[in-house]
Image (cartoon, rainbow, N blue to C red; front, side, top):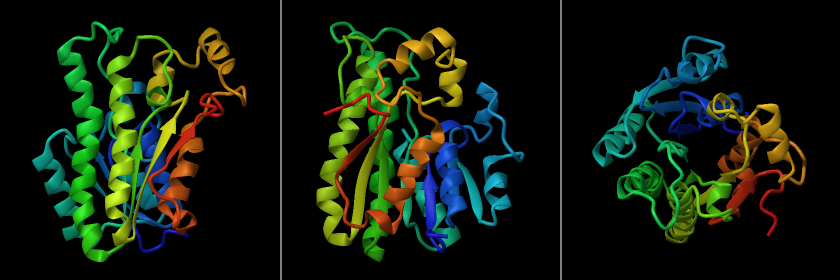
Length: 263
């Protein structure tokens, strides 16, 4: 119960990696607020829950939980969400700004990515992260403590050709925003760190073919540990960053990739 008495907000938590983070934090004692634009999002990719909703899964662990529908690209909606968390729980100790993803189809080449695609992925990943961090920072500054965890990607750490540009640029920007925010909030005893997942078997990735034998074999050759990651692999690092284990760690981007990014 390392996080007993703590309140965590996890965005994009109705399925996939966000759900894994929410459940893991609850398992070690935190009350967890689940945010998503669709609280039934797990159904979209056939992800099986152990209860009707992620909030119910958390309550089954003996923790309090609240589900809030909000679009993180809407600054006002994000502020209302954080205000609701404070009103309901009295404080906010942990933010996992997870909502995002490469949700715009197409090759997205550096020399030709359409403006609309670029703006959409910047809004969803970078601006959504910034809005959540800004809203959470104020109550954390007032209580002079807090843990902020942003979510980048191995795509923002390395380049493997011109494809995937919009997503990669958005995630790279999150990495540096994390460093800037850590520098500002350090005097308030607030740590700000980022995880950068690699090839993870989330429900969406599986639905899109990442676990197909041919794709899996190809990707495993890029990974030093020769296996694709699981959501729980990332959740364990979130535990480290959300708990007192990381009290003297801030402004860092931790690649959770099994050795794809070796530098």
